[in-house]
Length: 464
Image (cartoon, rainbow, N blue to C red):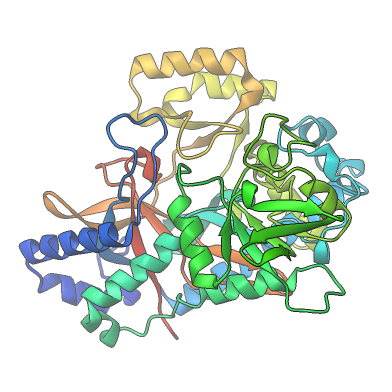
């Protein structure tokens, strides 16, 4: 909210004035009202392996995170450049592999990567798009400096919280929206539906039929699956609701079978088709991959899209952007050490207490070390893990992440935040203004993931 000189930054003037007039007890009461709204709506997530509670609310903070229109315009240009390059990269590695032949990325890093799906070689996805729904995680380190922390090109989650956070804020604080011209986010479900329809197979003689494929009620993001299906006006299905007949995918209905053209799947690659991937999967649909490969179905996001968000590939994204766009990246990566490289490994092992170390295939804040916040025993244990399997880890410097005023038990205090904008790629790139701001609620913590105790905020992009 404030610059390095202590002055309130322009986008926050109105909210700063409003905060200065609020009583902490009133804000706490509003926060309780918001939690009650979330409980009535059923906005929860599951924490795997948690015996205390199978469902939790993601803590919601009522102080918004605000970006000016000019800031968002710069971010938008960088995000669009990045998602176009990532899709071009995926198309290339599943076809001619020109970037490997050019020596811009090591072949083994791609071909031997667990996220690489050989069955996708030479498959032609609709419009050449592999990742239609992308979440780009950003962190801010100074007034004009944003870094990409990671790319989410498989099944990025959290958009339902972005939408519900906004609805809740507008319900509780209408006076704030009357003082501030905030760009809307509520058209995301319509944009998502239009994107799905735009990538349907060619030559349909009717409107495309789209469905959301969920693993079921025990998935941590099940609320989001059902929420998005409802908001788009499409069916929420499980694998048992679908069947392949006569070379096409059909949905079982009370009126018989109905052909499906686009599947927005929220299940992982290995479980998609037991005839091609994991034979023990009961979540997917036998034969669905053959229908997809024949061009009679679009799967969103495509199988194999995870190769572009693997953390070992992340370090090469600046090269990927330049290779496919001919221009340097607008948004920078966080400087990253690859432990698979001997020199990088030596540096990381000598400086573990200063670095953030992540598993290459990890997610959700699990399997990572935040060196400055770790105990000596934790650092020593992680050193043994990295030594044993260095190719499984990357490391990054601890960034001075920006903070935002947040309501905590002691009152209003600064807490670290990041931002996940959601991008839709189909007949065009659709970018919702803002995204999901995640906040680390523990003092000094840099881990914002909900599974690790983080919360969320409404994100405002002001109209210019």
